[in-house]
Each structure stands twice: as C-alpha cells, then as structure tokens.
Image (cartoon, rainbow, N blue to C red):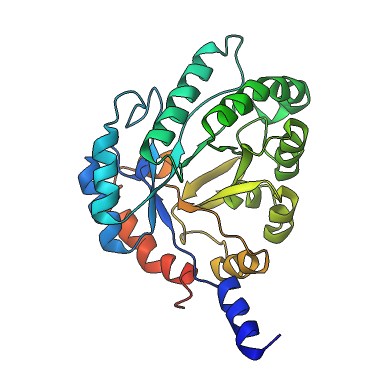
Amino acid sequence: MTRRTLLSGLFAKNKPYGLAFSFKGFPNWPLEKSFALCAELGYSGVELFVGAKQSHEPGKLGVDEVRRLVTKHKLPVQTLMEDLRLTGEDQTLQLQHLEASLKLARQIDPKRSPLIETVVGGRNDEWPKLKPIFEERLKPWAALAEKYKVVIAIKPHIGSALHLPEDGAALCDRINSRYLKLNYDYSHFQLQNLDLKQSIRAALPHIAMIHIKDSIGKPPKFRFALPGEGTIDYKSYVQILHQLNYRDPIVVEVSSQVIAQPNYNPEQAAKQVATTVLPIFRGRT
C-alpha cells in the first residue's frame, strides 16, 4: 500500500458528515420556506414529517413540488418521519398509512428513495408481552418495504415497549429483511444510563439512520432538548461514527417537547444547531 493510497483511505473514512434537518421542527411552515432556510444554514438534507396527523399527509403532499424544491435547493429528502404503532388490534389502518408513505418515498426519488422511520408504540413494562406480537406484525411491514424497495427504520424509544438497542437489533435479526432496520437515537439511551459506543455497537449492523437531539434532567422528570443543549459529547460521537465507518443519514430531530415550549422559534432552533453542532459533524471544530 502506497502512502497516497493510505492517506486516501483515511480521508474517505473520515469524510465530514452532513446533517439533515427534520421539518417536524417547522410546524405549519410552507415547504419552500423550510427548504430555503435549511439550504441557507448549510444542512445537507431534510426529513419530511408525514402521516395521518402530521404536517404533510402522504396522500396530500405535492410530489412535483417536493422534487422542484430538492433540485432548486440541492437538498435531498433523506427520511420520512411517520408515526405508526404496532399496538392495537386492527393493524389495517397502520398498514395503509405505511404503504402511502412507501409510495411517496418512491415517487420522491425512485433511485435513492428516502427511508421511512417510525416509533412502534407500547410501554416499557409491556416489552415481554409485546415482543412476539411486534415480531409477527413487523413481517407484513417488511413485506411491504420489500415490495417498494424502501427501508423502514423502527426506533427504540424510552417511552415505548421497544426501548433498548439490543432488543431492536434482535427484532431485525428475527425478521431478517434488508428493508427493516433501526433508527438510532442516543438521547433515549443516555436517559437509561447506557454508554454511547456500547449502545451503538448493540444496534449494529442494523442502523439505517440516526436522529440526534439532547435531553435535560433524569427519568421520570426530564425533557428532550435541541442538540447541543444537553450533555451528549458530539465530538466523541463523531469520532465513534468514523471508527465504525458510518455513512447513512444523520438527522436533527426537534422533539415535540421542544416545539411545545411557549418561546419556541423554528428559525432560531435551526440556526442554533447549525451554529453549535453542525460544525462538529463537518470536522470544523
């Protein structure tokens, strides 16, 4: 191996990361305004907030308009945020919502379709009971994802039955589909006193995307916060991602708890993260 080849390999492995920004953080904003601000601030992609009760319903979102804005602002749609549940007796409606979002992802970009990410419902203490139910109900999800060739990333969440990274990885192992993966969000694991590197390793190789945000306080009294407002060490985080050669989407999530604050300002939130955290992922600090 020559010195040039070695340096080239190291540079590729440590290529700076971009951050996408979730449009969940722009409640009731027009798409044009949201895309324009993210482009101005230097984000590298966006996450659309879709679903029956969300800002942009899959059946009502203008695909041609999304494509136009992607091209105009050079910001790909990397992920679509859904809000589905594996709980409840009737899963027909959940499957209908999921299929609508899968179709939307294919329409937005047939070659590099954005993935679908969602929580799955339930409570922490219900995991032993819901584990086999989740496994059975994820099978038709995976079948639909394979039909449309779009990845679904389920999210272990501190408030859900599925709340540990290793349990999410075990579910993916059992389903054994290249289209069923995980959305890794360390803020949920930090609140459970889990180590950053160990929790990432527990979820590998099934991580298809990452959400970043912070938290303030400890369970049961805590609230989620913008990235950079808590105690997550993002410099160490980026180093770990480089060590693992992670190259999939990283998305800034703005929690509903942040949006609910009386003084919440969407533009200021996006600017704050772009100023404090984005440079770390770009390797500029």
